[in-house]
Length: 321
Ligand code: NAD
Image (cartoon, rainbow, N blue to C red; front, top):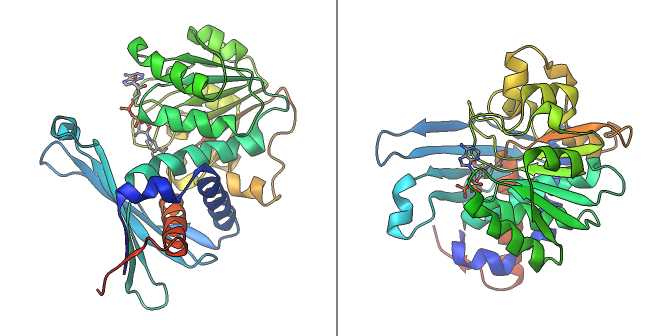
């Protein structure tokens, strides 16, 4: 068995490798070569923790495994990250454990890669302004990955906790872009690409605030009850997702599905666009919305890449197991 510890990940896998892994597994999902197993997520009644696992099998890439982890709100006081995750990969031919991989940084990389893939395929041509809603841990990864897909000229941003905005400014400046904090009306009016990455349980961005000719990547909603944009905005948009089953239950689509304004048949998995089986955006005035719920296969794809790179670079720790 190979072990790739959390502290090795940053030196092994970069944004490009994460992007390629996620793009490829989304394509495999749409070809029905890869599928996710049902997600388990439980409040364990101890340490206020939410624990669960996401798993799946990619028959094309021969990647089988699971990501186990969750959210421990008391971790900050212990100097640990609140979100904790570990990926375990198995040999699909024998069922033997193949690798144990630190999953914290990988989660941020694969989540940013997902919205970045959606921007590559769905952003309006000539997108110049990136709008960020959310300024937490994930936002920095999201912004950096998005900036690789379009020639943005500036970043504008809004956060529920305004004291978080300097993080967005710092990252924007590091990638050579000016940053301006704005109100949501301005954000919806000016941004060509919008990323929402918050832990909100109420809609933040309203339908009337978005002008059109916009791509919105909704990345924060990954649990029943969470919501970042008004359901009417989802219904108005051409809707894409990583996986329909998750979108309608734990993703941003859950609300428009529940109020009957969005039909499941009107949601397209992004893999179909990647494979050329769906046209994606059809006009520059359209609103496209990617509901990025976060699937287990994304975790397995980046973990498998990290293992391959660890072997290639001679830093894989091998344990007889
Ligand atoms: P974080 O705790 O670092 O940041 C949370 C963000 O949400 C901050 O910008 C904060 O100001 C904002 N926020 C908090 N309460 C809010 C409220 N009531 N209304 C509006 N905004 C509010 O978290 P993070 O690690 O950046 O993760 C952000 C979200 O992304 C979380 O909901 C997390 O579960 C989700 N996430 C999704 C995926 C995926 O694959 N889709 C992967 C990882 C994380």
